[in-house]
Length: 386
Image 1 (cartoon, rainbow, N blue to C red):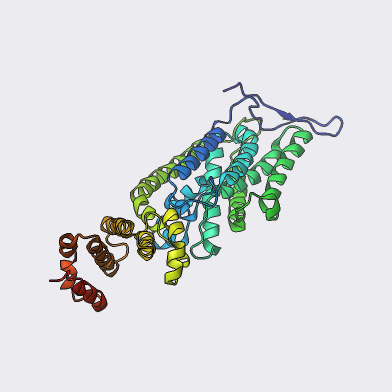
Image 2: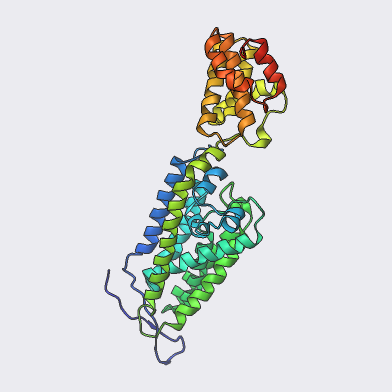
C-alpha cells in the first residue's frame, strides 16, 4: 500500500477558503477489483470445462450449464429454496463477450472507486448490488428464464462512483469520473446493437443494483468525515463480504453435489428436437447422436436407422449403448422405456445369432404384465419366451 494523503477542494471563487474533503490513495492497488476480475475469469474457465450441452459457439455457455453451475431460475430459487443462486449467478457469464464487457466496466469503476472507499466497502457494495439486482429480476422474470452476470453489482458500482465523485478535490476530476459513470450506465441500457451478441439485458437487475448502490453509498457517506482518507465502518463492509462468500461456499457445495443430476438432465434431447416420424428418426439420428451421446434415445434412433440399412451388428451395438445408459440412470425415463430397450436389444442379439443370450435377456419381460402385448408377441414369435 502507498502512503495516503489528505486532499483539498479549492472553491473556484477568488479568495474563498479551502475546504477539507476526503482524499484517496492514488497509488494504492485495487486488490478487490483485481480479485473480482480473476474470479470472473476462473469461473468462466470452469463453465467452459464443465459444459453440459455444447453452446452455439466455442465460448457460448448453454443455459443448461449456467443453471447447473449456479444461475438464477425462479423455480430453483423460490420452490427449491436454493437462495445461494442470487450470489453465485453474479460470477457466471453467458459468453466471452459478456465476460469482457462486465470485466471492463468493473475495472473502469473499481480503479477509482476502490481507492476512495477501501477494499472492504467496495467488495460489499458489489455483492449487495448483485443480490439486489437478482432479487429485482426474480420479481419480474418469466418462468424458466435463466439469469447470470455481474450487471447488478456493476450498476451499484457505477451509481456509487457518480456520487462519490462529488467529494473529489477538483472539478476536472469530478467531471471526468462522473463522465465515466454515466457512460457505463448508458452502455448498460442502450439497444442491443452495441451490446455483446446473444446477451439479453435484465433491466430490472440494473435498476435493483443501481438503487442498492445509491443506498449503500449514502450510508457510507454518513460514516465519512471530512479529512479522513477512507470512510468509517469498514469492518461492516468486511463482515458483509465474509457472510456473502460463506453463503457462496455453501452454494458451491450444493452445486457440486447436484451437478451430476443436471448433467444427465441437460444432456438429454429437448422435447422440441425429438423426431416425430420414423422417417425423421432415420434422417436425424446421426446428428442427434453426435449432439446428445448421453441420451439413450439417440442410440435407439441410430439403431433403428441402422436396421433399415440392414446393419445388424451396428444396430446391436447402439441398442447395447442405450441399454447401458438406462441402467446407469434407471429413473430418468421410467420402466416402460427401459423394458422397450431391453426387448429391442434381445431381438437384435437374436438376429445376430445369439439366441441363448437373447432368450436370457428377455425372460423377465415375458411374464411382466405391464409389457406391451405387441412386444410380447414379437418375443414369443422369435421363441425368446419359451
